[in-house]
Image (cartoon, rainbow, N blue to C red; front, side, top):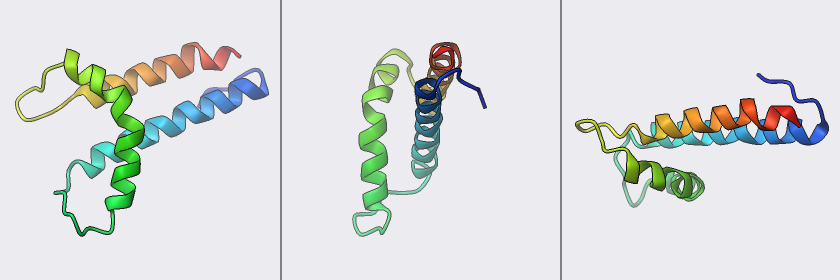
Length: 90
């Protein structure tokens, strides 16, 4: 975990880390088949709404490798770089 120099920096670092957690939640949810009557539909909808604006551009640039979509891995790396290089400086 990175230490920021100000209160604003700490909040930004925490939000970045939270977003990485949401990206990981989306990856885990993608392993399970989608069912219209699942109790996780609300969670799935929120997670997909939060992550799709970031993942869509990566998906356009990075083709799937076989049946694996690695765009979320690249998105996680980019978010981590932004958090560690930019947000932690505040």
